Amino acid sequence: QCKGWTGSGNVPSVGTNNQVTFVMDQNSSITWNWDASYKLDLAVEGNGNVDGGGWYASGITNIITATPDQDHYFKGWTGDVATNQNPLEVIMDSPKSLTANFGPKPRFGSICISNDCSAITLECLETGVLYRIEESTNLLAGESGWSVTNSFTADNSITNVSLPTAGAVKFYRCRFTW
Image (tube, rainbow, N blue to C red; front, side, top):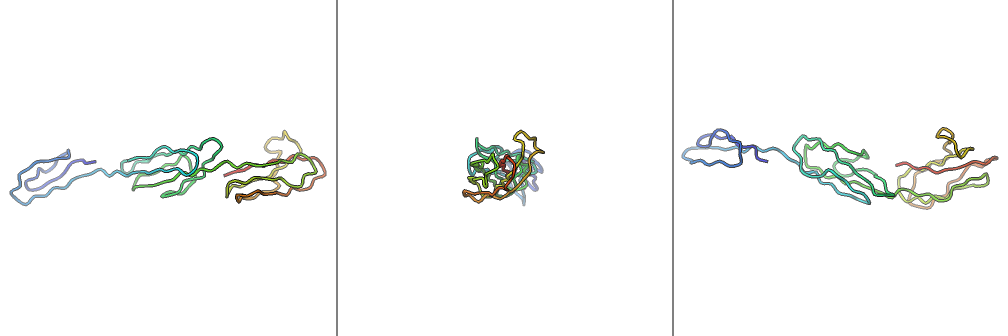
């Protein structure tokens, strides 16, 4: 956006609009003064949406938010800023382009609730998701009543996870993080 000008010679010395008229009969100069603005281009990969793109004055901190659709999760930002922070503060000191990446929430299959299971079968739809197999002797145990018996990172496949053999009935659950 034009803030005005400075001039010498026949050009008036200063102005605050985007036009000036003068007759030139000597060496003259004009310097246009501009406010710097930068564009923040946002894109989406997967199922979700993002808010906060557009033009911003130089130095402004803009907050952008990625919102996943139902049964999806936010995987992270790629482009000029790579992070999984959400919402994200972006300092507009140059043009920027970011993509909000979304993936389907991981699903899991059978969960064992007896002492004769030897494995849990999981359908691992998303690469890089950390699954934790947890066990407890009490199905209604609070968070401190469960312990991790196995963990692995998914690789887009059907995965059989071995369970420790137990002499007593134990309950197993699968949890995932991203």
